[in-house]
Length: 303
Image (tube, rainbow, N blue to C red; front, side, top):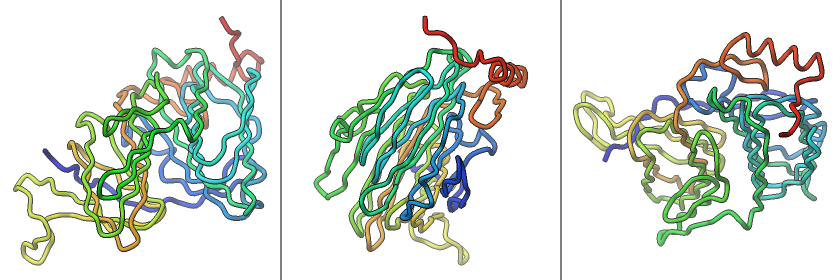
């Protein structure tokens, strides 16, 4: 067994998207090979309606899948194919844009004015870029939740973990998407498939993610020439941790416990041509998408 080393730890960056929604971006519009098959991760937790009510009006998507996970508040969504719905606290939506869709998402918040959630973009391989669009809307009660004897709680949103399988399926990246809460002071290890790219995103409390992988062997909490051999990172709210290869992730929860997303997926390893919410393999395909938008042929008829 090998604990995944920490390649990078960084705080999410404040930014603005849509018609004026304030959010924090953990990654996106960067080197897409770093977290292949994942392209972008946004944290849209806000406490004031004026920071989110303008929402994300009609915009196109092609060549990707978007995953929206709501923690608090509600989001109304609709698209050019006639789909309509509302996501509430604990709900998940996995949208496969495929060949193209016009989409809007309008956050409404809750009675306290809170709107909390995340959106992740996953790439589609070339053979599925132009597949038919589809939705998977999952209510909170459909998501399995497992509680270990030590009080650790894991919501299995996608993939299989601790004998439970998430309700979202048929995803090209074959991801595992877990919402994990570890009680204060507890050290916990989680299995992650060796061949997947993986990252954690801390959004409550704090935890120290252990890097116990070294060519010279494992030296936990020891020093060599005044330097720690075991690289660790005390990570708090809105912190992204990008892991190297290995089959385990270990975290030491702080005195308030720690809650984080642990997300992994199989790399696609294909060229990426990117223009906003349209992600293809070549510049020519991006140019064709722009032509389709201008000509009104972006939305393909259902077969």
